[in-house]
Length: 403
Image (cartoon, rainbow, N blue to C red; front, side, top):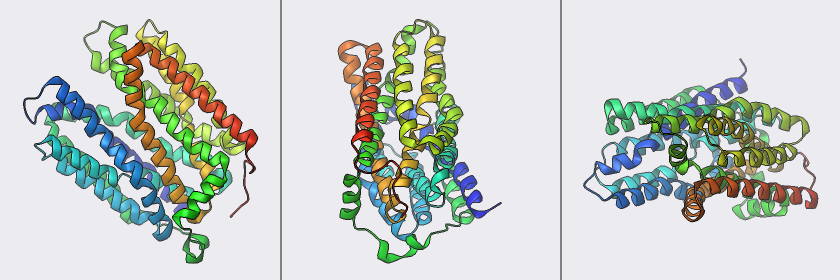
C-alpha cells in the first residue's frame, strides 16, 4: 500500500472515531445539565442552547488560524494538537458540577475543533486535482458514518454507565484516533509547501479569496447549507411526535435523523467522483436543486415512513456538497494557503451551525414546524441562484491555472 493510500485509510478511520465521539455527548447535554442542580425547564433549555452553540462560535473564529499554522508547519502537528485537545476537554467535562464550567470547557473544545477540516486539508494536499472529489468523498464517508452512529452509541452508553463515564470513554476514543495519527501518518509535503518564500500573509489570503467571485460564493454556500440543514434538526423530534402516537418517540426520531445520514453515506463518494468528471460547480448546482426538491415534501408528510423516505433522499442530495466544496477549493487555492482557505470555509460552516437552529426556532415559533421545510427549500433555491449568477459572472474560469 502506498503512503498516500495509507494516509487516506488512517484518516478515514480517525475521522470516524472523532466524528462519532464528538456527537456521542450531544443527545444528553440538557440531561447532564439537569444533574448539576434543581433548575427550571426554561433555565435548562436556555443553557443547553448556550453550551451547544459556544463550541461552534469559538471554532468560527479559530478555524482559519489552525489552517494557517498547518500551511506553514504541516498538518500532522495540528491533527495531534486538536485531537488531544478535544480529548482532554471532553474528559474534563465528565468531572464538571456546574453549568459555567461546562460552558467554558465547550468553548475550549471549540478552540481546538480543527481535526476533521485539517484532515481534509492533509488529504487534499496530497491528492491530484482531477481526483480530489472522489478522494475527499471517500474521506467524508468516515465523518458521515461517525456522525451517524455517534448519537446512538452515546445514548446507549449514557443509559448503561452514566454521563460521566460516557465523557471519559468518548475522550479515550478521540485520544486513540490522535495516537493512530501520531504513529501512522507520514505527511508528504510538496516543494511549494516546504518553500518559505511561497508563504502568504493573512491579508494576501483574503485578497485571493475576494478576487475570486466564485470562491467567495462557495464559502457563502457552505454557511447557507449548514443553516438549511440545522434549521430543522432541533425540531425533528417534535415533528415526529406530530406524525405518530407511538411511545418510542426518541427511537423513531433517531430513525428520521439517521435516514439523512444513510443517504449521505451512500452518495457522498459518487457525487465527488461526478464532480471530478463534469466540474464541481455543476454538481453543486444539481445538488442544491435536488435538496430543495426533496426537503419540501417532508412538510407534506402524513405518515412517519414518508418523512423517513424523503429524509433519506434529502441525505443523498446533500451528501456531495462538502466534498465538492472542498475539491473546488483544492483547485482554486494554491497549496501554500490551502489550509487557511479551508479554515475560512470551516468557519462559515460553523457560523451556519450557530444560525441554523436559531433560525428554525424563530420560523417554527411564528408559522409552525412544517413551514421550516418550505423556508429551507427556498434557501437552497436561493443558494442555487447565487451559484448560477456567480458562475456566469465570474471573471476567472471554473478550473483555474495550476499553481
